Amino acid sequence: MRGRDVKRSLLCVAFFAGAVLALDDAAAIEIAIDDTKIELVGPTGYCPLDKSSWPESQLIDFTSDGIKKRGERLAYFVDCERARSWHEDGSGKDRGDKDLGHKDLGHKDLGHKDLGDIVDYQASLQLRDQNVTSAMLEKLCDTLRKGDDSSKGWFEIVLETIKGAVKGSYGGAEDTTVIYLVLGYEDPACRVLRFSMRNREKVYTVSALTTIKSKLVTVHVSTKVRDMDLLKGNAGEMITRLLATSRQAATALIAANQ
Image (cartoon, rainbow, N blue to C red; front, side, top):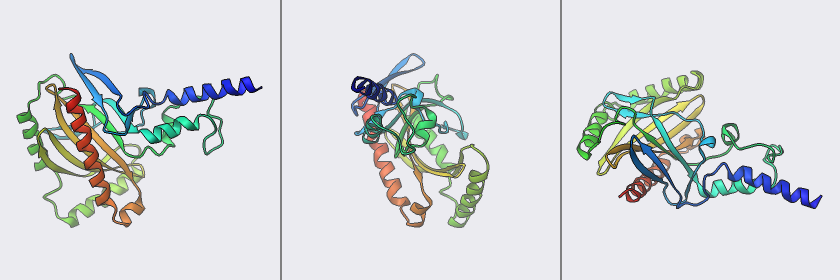
């Protein structure tokens, strides 16, 4: 009996470990955009998820024609401590008292986990086959700024937020960008803040568009927003945290590919 229990525990841990590619915040993933090989690394304290366990989220491509719902996902990174807690949960049962020793950790399982801040790396489909220079990126950033919501008054933004909330709550699983603001171009990245909704979920995302080996790679750092966070006025603190993580992620990505 004891031998079977040990074997079962080991299998359980193996299943959960499979959900995380590496419980090491120094882990890197090698990908290719066309023939260009790029190493993706997360900010300090973040570990990559195995592709089979990527949570569902909207693909986003920032183009000269605005934000498009398309792109190529390259990698997902989550907080290592959270990932380790899922790994440790493998020795027992989840909060629903369902035995997790007999199944892999896929989309549905991660959907019930609190992922915290997510770092999502994507490639642009529009610029995939082009060599993107810093000048091109700065021009794209200026173009995006001309179409963002910074020129609108607060009353108009509130109205759009309400309309977006209704659409996001009852419009199905389609991701809706309610507001986006270009925070500016700070070589080597253009940063954009988005407030989006999907079903009843509200999300803040800080995106850093940067060039890696002449390829455009966008780092999205996002977190879910609860209604209570908005009521308590925690939005500023959350955005500041996302911005700091975005800078750290872009810096690490650039350093790994020099």
